[in-house]
Length: 112
Length: 116
Figure 1: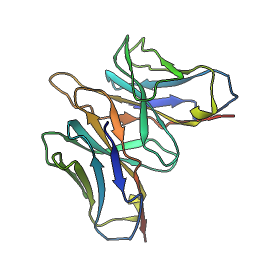
Figure 2: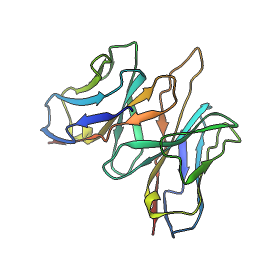
Figure 3: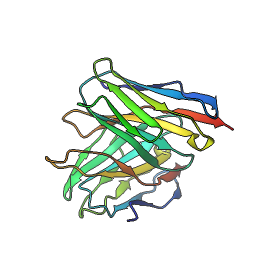
């Protein structure tokens, strides 16, 4: 059974710091992996989608990598800002299946 | 485009009552999904649909029903509400074809449901 884990559960950093969020999954047979941002009381906003054949995706200050063989993905945030404070979730789409499995998220706080 | 919309935003139900959570999207997406999110947990898939008239169970379907009569709408029905169904419910949609298998999901703002 596919399990998705995100460590740490919470992270607090000073403004301007570069940081890495981690996502691990137990079954490498995935179709894609998606990173989301969730603000308190809000829905999820898609940040980056990495297909299983890709190694990384970039959008602005965000860079996501995927290593299927080791069951890991990282989300790199450069020059963090207080506006980056939110919960970040990763989710994998199972191969040949429409099910998505989510991690519990990492709650990020960027202090001014 | 309004994207994915959900109603209501909040609802309190008594045990045994029934209700329908509404979800609509105006992006002409063929796939639609219902998830629940419990405090401190990731989202879990309840049901999904790959097109009008086609639905299938996800990881946690018990206690719920869905229908998909149009491309735009995907209501979720709770029958005989139980305290275990207290959660935040999210609807999502995505577009995918054999030539464009993207599956990038777009989410609604959620419905916070309390069953007491």
